[in-house]
Image 1: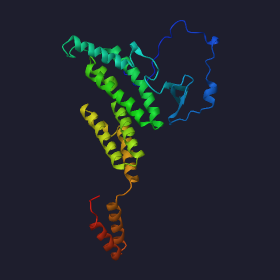
Image 2 (image 1 turned 180 degrees about the vertical axis):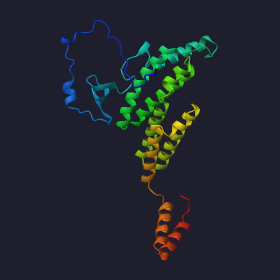
Image 3 (image 1 turned 60 degrees about the horizontal axis):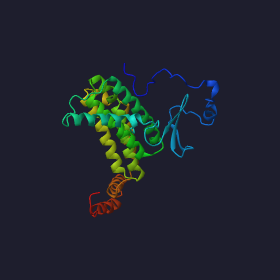
Amino acid sequence: MNRGLWAPRIIDLPPGLPHSRDMDFDISHLLEKWDYQPGQVVVRRFKAKDGREKIQLRVDLGLLQMNADGRPDGKRPFGQPSLFDHYLGRLSKHKLAHENSDEGFKLNAEDCAKLQLEALQYHHRYICLLQLEDYDGVLQDAERNFAVFQFVGRYAESEDLAWSLQQFQPQLLMILTRARASQALKSDDYPVAIKQVEEGLEQIRTFYREHSQSEAAEQSGEVQSLGEWLEEIRSKRPLSTRERLERALHDAVQAENYEKAAKVRDALRNLKTPE
């Protein structure tokens, strides 16, 4: 059964860890000063003693801490920046040995599981970065995970293994859409923001169509969330000069103020460009 990105994984602790009585593991003093708020992403960014930026996410039973740069847990698997980079290196070596062909290169269940667990780390971080309004950081991590999904989709040795990550693509597309549109809104570029959301919605619907789930698309939380946000953005978009004049003309006609309506109509005719 697929656990999903957010599902916990139970593992055995390695031998040789210090006994609990030998160290102070209690973080209650941290949690008491930082309340958990159900339904909200409670996050903070700070510089640690080693000078590196860290991000903490408050969860109901404690907190998650991650590096702000590089792999979130700070590890370098096989000496690479990430496990994904390691597998990309394996693919390159395979191609060199097979006349630049990727035929025969496959990811087994263990490979896919490892990549999924790593993707979860980046998922946690880009959710935090979205809350912190670091949209460049969100895009970097989310686009990285999107590349992982495509990589697994292409090389997993079975469709079920590929689906183990690809099923989260609508959620990822929603995050990418929100980050791109939010960047536009920061500079009050409403037309670009609206276009980004419309394109994001179409990408999600296309995903469902390609996986024979067209009916599920409109019921998905991602489509509903972006659809509501799109309407909100449209309602807040400043009117163009033409739109303001057209509204004024409508109001003047409704009020039977024909003198004003004539002036507004002349102003509309005098617009140099169709705004």
